[in-house]
Amino acid sequence: MSKAEEIPEDIIAVIEAPNPSLEMKWNSLYGIDAYKRVVLSYMRDCLDKTKIESWCKRYYPNSNGLLTRMTNELGFSGKVALFGDSGTGKTQFAEGLADALAKTVGKVYLIKIGLLRSKYVGSSSLKVTKAFRYAKEKAKDAPVLLFIEEFDSVAPNRDNSQMHEEVKAAVNTLLEEIDSITPTDRVLVIAATNLLSQSVDYAAERRFDMAVNFKRPTFAQRIDLLTCLLKDFNISSNDIILLTKGTNGYTPADIKKAVKHALNRCLSYNRKLTVRDLIGSLKYVKPTRSYGANGHE
Image (cartoon, rainbow, N blue to C red):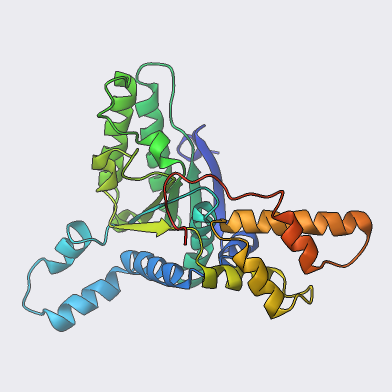
């Protein structure tokens, strides 16, 4: 492996898509088809300069420099932020998006970045630079979806008077690196955080063209999720409605955990799954604590 190809220590994973594991994650996101369609279309358009160029020529043939403004100033920079409570599907969405994108544009690298912090002066900024440099290098082979999880930890609000100067410098470097990449580099950025406006630096937040709010599922979305999860267990539609009423405020991860709890009980007693088992599991699996009043009915 050449020096340019060495994986920086704070890159958690480099996954090539299409990938069956990532495909499964994308396909098991229920009730948010609109989010999936909009973000996938946006990312695909950012990579496909010819589509934007042909649109500009068709509708605005006499405009000089419109394509450049579209990609650099007017919102096609390939950067999306995901925010919402834990367990609402942000990570699953970002990872699955890499596979969905690869299905339309060919091979894609999903690169997941970690905390990028160090106790040594100057090291945090260097880690940020190395991670982005690596992404650009990989993009020479195929488009890269650069996924930054726990973005509030990587780009915390610099208004905090207690923040160490080293952290502030690392945030500055991160913003510079985010600004420096465009779809022309074949690098797209997706960041996820439980808290956006409350904890993420305001200058970092505005770097993203699109912010998608992952709320806790509505009644209809929970019916959709439970119907899919329980389709093989002969649970009636009336029982699914009853169960749905009991899961108000639950995240998709909470609901899956409750179903797993009920299944574990049935396996222990060697019997079929019933709605009584499922409703009983809600006594043990409670909704994940919320960071706000986000998404409750």
